[in-house]
Image 1 (cartoon, one colour):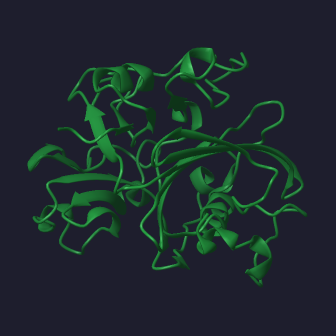
Image 2 (cartoon, rainbow, N blue to C red; image 1 turned 90 degrees about the horizontal axis):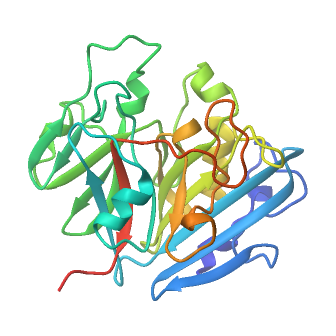
Length: 286
């Protein structure tokens, strides 16, 4: 495992320490499985992260061996599993924020140089915050990058054929980005995020919430978690009841996260939420 993954929370002076447990992926406390060449799955039940129990899944993807795709429908909502099946995926997680009534992303989304959705301006603060659109996964010649929104907006980034925005932006160039005070950030929820390490590996992380054995995280806790795992750039994706990680061939229909949907507490799957898009890891196409 790369040296950057040796980073532990104890080095962050002035920030909360996640109990007595190191979160480094080099710790033997993680369950580790090689899913495919270039893809490692880590999972762990933490007894004390900020004095709470947490269940965390991490996918570590080598961009040189595998590819990450955005799989979507402009209006129709489908489960993460269905989107993964459609492209013969190896693993997948939920994507960005979406309109549950009308379908489609409520954040900026460009796919193969076609703008599919623009940032919504017709939704009130209760449904959409500016910070949920301030970062993006950008697919370009250098591979996957996580970028902050330019002052002139996402359309300015013409060199990236595919852009999927979300937020808040958590890390940029190794520095923690400021978080606004809001219930979305301040309460503990299930979280999904994506990060890039110094060496260019992609880390996709889920934390379950509101479940026995997993309390969920505040946004600042999730930010610190991604940094402690070795990410230098990181972005929050849709969370709460949307958080779901799927891995081909695993038990429980491949759902490895302990899904939470409103008041349903059916472990380990529950009822899968349908979303507008998903991030799916696949083999490179011939």
